[in-house]
Length: 247
Image 1 (cartoon, one colour):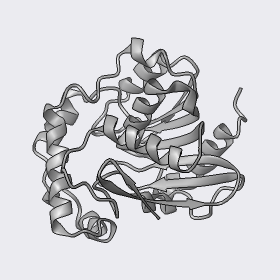
Image 2: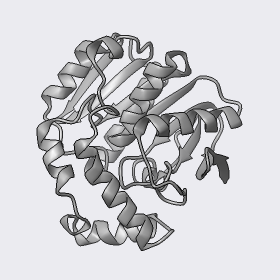
Image 3: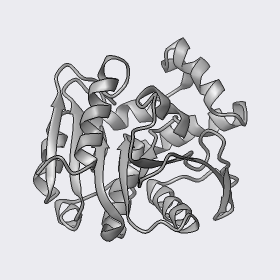
Image 4: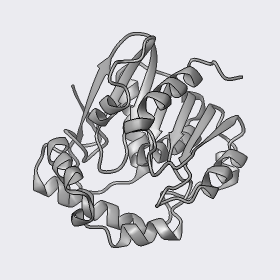
């Protein structure tokens, strides 16, 4: 399905029945990536899976991207679907988008899981971003990008430029403890202790700043430790949390 939002065609899927569960992919990703975490739709949830502007099947004519704008896009999509409050999982850039959503309109995020989502970009992440090229990715990931992003090479080049641009953007990802303190949703923070972009200490900073938060550090986990051998444990734990099993 397609929604026309702010000059972009935002592609999304809706599946299942139950409480709305918003799944936000990471940078260079797309909504379809969640099939590798949830091969079977979790029972009791109505999944909403958008492709953020410029990703996957979605367009981005301006070529401009901020996570704050992505949050506004998602709010507009939820409005179109008649959804007020939502539960959510955000991976990396999708988690940054959730940080914007949960600080801009706290009452609309009922509960959330943040995976490898920093409140700011540390120096080691900016160093990677500043020098990022597609050739830095494994060949398997480069092939996956061409399956995922259906608008061709121009789209992929735009996403690479966008990633490099994060290195010099200090305003979009700058969530202070004071700002994070307004988040009202119960929040599960998931970080790998071997994340090459965001040192695990950032997870403890988030946990200290978000009032109703829980922290799960994945031993020997890298960036986005929810795929492959981690997927089934993450899916079971995250859905139990979102169903309210943790008190």
